[in-house]
Every structure is written in C-alpha cells, then in structure tokens.
Length: 294
Image (cartoon, rainbow, N blue to C red; front, side, top):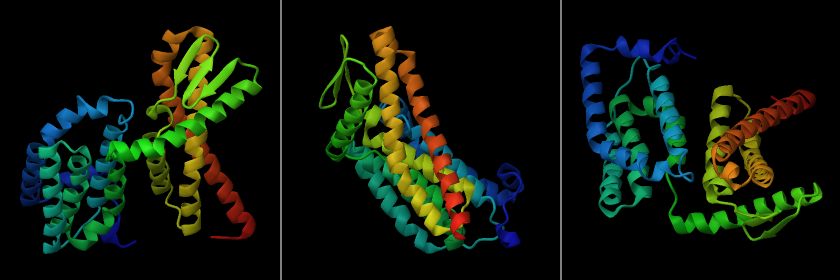
C-alpha cells in the first residue's frame, strides 16, 4: 500500500488537518445535504424506519457513512472528474421523482447515487474506488417495492415457520402450522416480515459483508463462499428467533412474547448470525490451511 493510501490513525484527525478551503467546501456540502435530505430523514425516522421491517435502515446509514468518511480521509491527493455530474444528476432526478410521488425506493436510493457523484466530482476515480464498498453497503437500506417484497418474503416465512414447527413438534410441544401462522397451546402467532422476511435477510447479508470488509480476506473464493453462506445462516438465525418467541409465548404468555422479549429476540438474531458467520469463516480458514489454498 502506498503512503498516499495509508489510512490515518484517526479519520477525524485528518479532517481537522484539511486546508481551510477544503473544510469550507465540506461545510457547504454538508449543509446542502441536510437541506436536501433532512426532511426525508425526519419522515423516515417517524415512519418507515420506525417499523420492525425497515428498522435496519438507520444502522446501515450510520455504518455506511462512517466507512465512507474513514476511507476517503485516507486520500492524500485526488483530482476531481466532471464525470461525477452524471451520477449526481441521476441521483437528484431520482430524489425529485421519489419525493414528489412518495416512492421510498427512489427517494432513499438517490442517496448513494448523489454521494457517488459528489465523490467522483471532487475526488475523482481514485476516490470513487475507495468509496466503492461503503456506497454498495448503503444500497441495503433501500426498501424494495411492496409487491416484490411480498412475493419473495412469503415463501421464506412459510419455510421458517415449517422448520420451527417441526423442531417444536420433535421437542414434544403441542404445535401446529397453517402457512405463516403457528399454533402452540392456546396461542396463535403469525410469523411477520421482520421475523423471517426479505428485509431480515438483507440486514444479515449486510452484516456479513461488513464482517468480510473488516476481516480483509484476500482470497476471492473465501469471500464468495462466506457471502453465499450468509443466506442459510440468515435462515437458521430466523428459525432461532421464531423458536425463542414461540417458547416465551407458550411458557410466559402472549404479553411476554410481544413485549420486551420480542425486541430482545431481534438482538439475539443479530448475535446468532454474527457467531455463525464467524464460525463459518473459521471453518473456511481451516479448509484453506488443510488444502493449502490462499
């Protein structure tokens, strides 16, 4: 790695050391960003991002922006490109259409495009290469159209419900299944999108990509295998979440299952998925050493 690309000890220290003219440009850009997207963030935090299905949005945004700042602050020299006007224009057009027509997919999806345009315009292709992963990571906060989500989510929820009900049956619990509805004792529980839907899969896939970015494995086969393994890992973690909610409801009542424990099960989902990702990565590392692969 060249000195120009060596990451500073602190991106915030590098930010302070920027020339005054660069800091002034940065302040103007941040002010423009707040004026453009501020109302959207307000609406998101009081609407879409307040739901269980899209609650991962703020986390994706915060981590993605942190990664973006950290990577861009490592640049010592950069030359802007007028090609940045293309994604910037596309992003602004998508935002205007999404905002005026209340289409969240366009309104939120415009943000990575606008960021890409700004990075390319001010920092050139070198800056865009360094920003590639954070910009890609931000795509996971974009909500899919409802019809697409419903079409892809329903089979996932039925599969998770089926596996969970079968495991509970083998454990001796009085459980029945009808589609995405589980009946255990006197209680009925519907497996919602947040428990086993496409959005949950996206969240865990983003978690897996973030883990790979932190680990910085150089072997393409290992990164590819780990990215593919996130899909069954997500399925297994969702089954675990449903099992916890069903067992809590059966033993402690519906109020316990829908209260604090319901939110705690979401944290358990993330923790279980992270542990499974780390375990899978460890097994891939052992396989690489055994086979003599890079």
